[in-house]
Image (cartoon, rainbow, N blue to C red; front, top):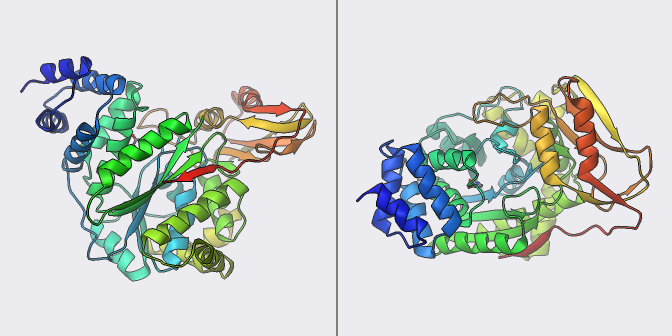
Length: 433
Ligand code: URA
């Protein structure tokens, strides 16, 4: 077999065999196939797509490229969740302790942010001394003891995906259904999950730009997952504006803690409650959705969900006093308001633009090795459907230096479209598949 023939075949839009896909994944993981040939094949896949058999073969080859975790000794129902990415998406921090406090074990490995989409690991590391890199033994023992552990993907899980993902990011080949589906599902297989709820986002702040693409991605992931003992639910949600009110690592931890105390923006609440209900259902809960919803609000209102988050943070070495007193968390040295020059209603708040501004502030990485500043980001005061008056604050930029700040203020103003007529607030979840 020869990589040039494989690239040529995909360039011509033909189907690759399982052997050819295995040959590529193995060769690239072992550095036997160079980046330039891998880039050519990945771009050909991006342009010409893959059928279901090819996507499955690619997923399994990537899942088998490294170690695989077995979580069956923890419980029959370890339910995992994933989001295909978003701006201001702090949902994992909120739903994991809620679901764990309702008795469903959460053993989750999360990633760092890349591009405009944030990562849970960067947010967890904003809690002073929180260790995301504990051993697999400690990870499992924490789940057994307190019912929850959230860590980074430190072990050698799906290393082929890590290489291919970084390559895709550098050659503008992230936005491809077969590549996203195989990337996510290979990690889920390697992480030992069998029941997963995936938030499949679409819109300006997501990889999928419209609902049809999001549904095709959901279907591709469901095709991979069908089979004995495996369950998957896909929640299709809009990511046109950032989720909730904050974007940036410490700022999002603050919003997550407030959410665990019951204060949530409408869009965040919709995603949190829906994802929790779907996770509880996959865990085998037979109550009606309304009953599950009541149970979720009960653990929020009686403090059990927040206490579970505190327990998680302490178990992973963090100083939980920061969660009890959020004012202790570090703040950005410069906080600049963004003032509206118009009267009207917010029609658009472009998540992609907000995500790019947050990267320029230093909250996210432009390159994999960049250091981030966990203090910086954006607090939104107005979201789609809100009434705005001339002179009112639209948002605050939290920055670490004043250089370029006027430009960022203007950019954030341009992310808002304010119109004279009233704009209705829309639900953001379209469908559950
Ligand atoms: N999340 C992933 O894990 N992989 C992708 O390709 C896109 C989003």
